[in-house]
Image (cartoon, rainbow, N blue to C red; front, top):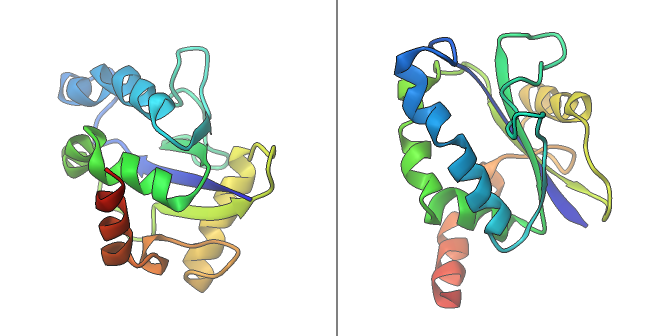
Amino acid sequence: MKLAQLNVGYARYATDDPRMAEFMDNLDRMNALAERSPGFIWRMQANNGNATDIQVPGDPDMISNLSVWSDIASLGHYVFNTLHARFYEKGAQWFDPMKLPHFVMWNIDDGHIPTLTEAMERLHHLHAHGSTDHAFGWDTVDMAAWRRCDMAAE
């Protein structure tokens, strides 16, 4: 089993607006960091190398990020313990607050590459039912225990 994740948001400004420059100028850097990270398997991308041009089914204004990781610990390490964390913390500068969850994880079979339609279904399931085996968020992870294990591994 592997782990898929989807993260979505609505940009405050057009992606070519100068107020989005720091975010847009660092996408390649963050994607390269993810690809070099232990446990990274795959990420959705368009011809431009990122996913900002890939339209979310039913919501053309939404920006999405879809990837596959070997496990939660690998994804968590990338999100919270690398340079990515500094950009993650700045997200409110570039993205509108979401009223519903904007992040979802789910387990997939080895070799399966999720589609954006599948990922959005998982996010809608999380909205409707909260965290379950079908779709879950960070609330299901014992972050204190995970971080202790992650620090011990370094």
